[in-house]
Amino acid sequence: MLNIPKRKTEKKRLNVLQKKPEKLIDKDDMRLDGRKLNELRPTKIEVGVLGNADGSAYIEQGKNKILAAVYGPKEVHPRHLARPDRAVLRCRYHMAPFSVDERKSPAPSRREVELSKVIREALEPSIFVEYYPRTSIDIFIEVLQADGGTRCAGITTASLALADAGIPMRDLVAACASGKVDGHLVLDLMDVEDKAGEADVPLALMPNLNAVTLLQMDGSLTIEEFEKAVNLALDGCKQLYALQKEALKSRYVAVKEAVDE
Amino acid sequence: MTPPPIVVRVQQKRIAELVSSGKRLDGRGLTAYREIQVEVGVIERAEGSARVRLGKTEVMAGIKIETG
Image (tube, rainbow over all chains, first blue to last red; front, top):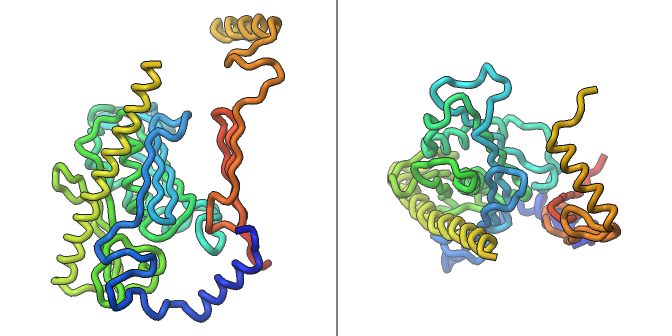
């Protein structure tokens, strides 16, 4: 791990010779990391990881490591942003400089500003913002390590952090991407598949309401492929939702044990 | 200067009392550390990384190397 020169050259070789690995999916429909086409990456979620935030959650999805924190509802600063009839939701998606192969400047990039916006819009329908007029709810999503699908993992995590903060919500939001890689429709693309694949369809879902709050597509698909990809992503969201509920429950078991002591 | 708020004064007094009897608010002795946890290599993508926890303080650092 600490053998820096070796890792660097390996990375370079991968960059120069294998911009696109020859085969992303082998003849047995196995993917580079050994997953099946419709399989999520191994996912671990933890709720309530930060002491100072009102709500927080952490996810490890494959190599993705993402931390989300929620502050609020609280007084809005600057005051002029406050709305008399509802809470304002603010969101910052940020990648740590060490989260990707090439160091990322810590300043918010164009991409991060855009993702902050789409994540906010994906979470807003789930929150009863009208319960907290003149307040703000601030969400911070920090990508510690990125390996594709961070916007979706960010939404999944931030939604849990909101629940952990005790903010009344219509439903949790679970998000997952599907896409087309080497002509196959696959679930939960990782970084190589995202970059070398043909298309990527991130989707966020409120599973109990059966309502989609985010749907994007990068690349191109036929109408039939698009429908299949959406259904695949919907299925992935439902699997993640089960994990979200599990994580939230175990948080309350931990709280109950602490109280009982 | 305005006097400190009452809670701060009460807490100050409490801390002073405890210290004079060789204790602290969180029950530690005067020379005891908070719980220390050190982990290295927590971010595989970084050339080097570490996470240190000192009680409820938690800091993560990552190192990237690039040619100048």
